[in-house]
Length: 326
Image (cartoon, rainbow, N blue to C red; front, top):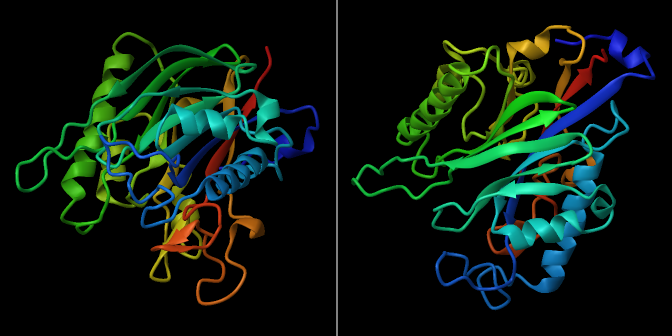
């Protein structure tokens, strides 16, 4: 859905909301409590300070540019995944040219065995955090052992004084097969729906932003289950129908695991609220492989142990909201 008159209004107050899987943003220190040994100077990846700082610079530039073609202002909210700890988030947000935005962040350590977490960056000029919590995703592997996967990050805040409820996700992977692991992502969908129901019981017509790397496409059972009997709408679904674009590419096939879902409230026009304007994948040329077998794919940091010096193996995704002044 697109409202073309938004673009013609130079005075339109546009706000970009983004999500970006950063592909293993680890520091170079070894954490004895997580499986991060590969990301050390002497580890499998030979992850040095120079490589770490180079990646931070590339990611900082990317975040600054997300949605720039439609909105000259950088994102006001950025959900991120695959970050090791607060240290790397702080380094990222203080790296030029991102440092001028003075992003703050919400982050909790998750039980993920690799030590990777989610977080929410926000511009305090436009977004005020009211409360936040990590929602534990309790799911077992087929052998009965707990899958120590990422929590779901929940943040309640005010975007230009309008209350919004933000969920940042990195759902269980497909490493053992999409069908075999599907039940885990269905549990994640239920966790969010239960929290939404809890919020809806005490707040009339709440605004939801559900973003993340869902490890499932818009048409997958888990995402469809998330939409079922809720007020959510997935503006990303139409982007994946031709399967000629996506946020990641595996074996020459595009997937759109990275998505941002919004509540139907954002499809309405009401003064003092935000309205949906556009959803897209930020897949500009500078983020792509320039040549070779993987030309056009995300220019990633590593392929196995081979250092490519790129950005991420995922493209960011974003939605643009228009604020309707009173």
